[in-house]
Image (cartoon, rainbow, N blue to C red):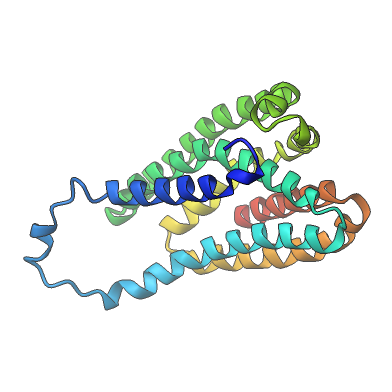
Length: 238
């Protein structure tokens, strides 16, 4: 993908990679053993929806950020600047979210066996590990942004370097919320509180977006997102 004329290549590669990654999950799955048992799918619908709603709230705020930038800023290129900045941050956050996915299974086991003291101990260890990851990532991306963006995205995206430096701090707040919200609250079956916090913060993000985008453009949307993530961490902590 070298230019805007290669859009079809981008769509094909994106769709194919998503398809292959999903199919690969079934390669080692023994479907024959599943058919031996009578599956009661109805009882899983409600828990799945409860866990789906937080992801919906996260996707909603990300989509609305880009939508509002397009509404309030005449130059449509700013949507691209924000989108590319957000994608890089999301790639870096994979180190945090993947760790959280691993920890949830162990914490769930402790909860099922009533090992509450082990849950608290493991959550503290999670905090230590998260800090060990997010601080170097945050400082590292700030240090290399000016050289990374021209090489990775091209000279036409130089503005992204400035935005990326400002947006990098959200990695730290996201790491803290991952431990408190996605690990601790979900394991303790407090999904309703977790979902409520996410939806309220998304609404607040919209409220902050309006004046901040009008004042500072893409930078305003980034500041609004940082405020949202800080508010999320504070609410989850309470």
